[in-house]
Length: 116
Ligand code: FES
Image 1: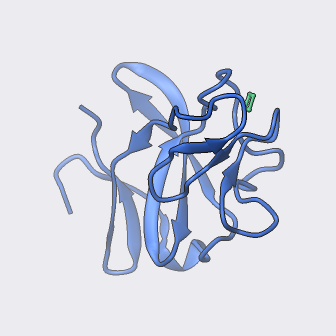
Image 2: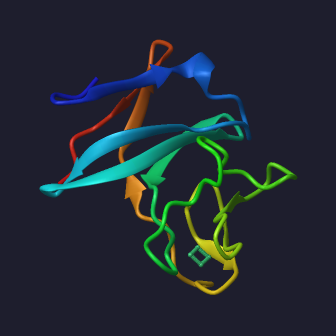
């Protein structure tokens, strides 16, 4: 694991297409909230901030996926994002994207890496 990384959760906490784990992060000197999910076996993390209006995405803690477990969805106005890239594919911010947060999965644990 990289220097300065911080443990977020166990790999087993992230079911594919299931509930995500929220965490606080220092994002270039500003406190922010982020989340990590698993999709198609891969772990991804993003700032918990819609690309449309800067509100958090989850309507209930950790509920980031749509009903089909295919896209991440913003609870406020329904923007849908590709889980692996954060690209908005539908909704008021189509063409924009979520801000990725660097994470890595090592030996059954998920870590956030220092930003910047
Ligand atoms: S605030 Fe997220 S879609 Fe509008």
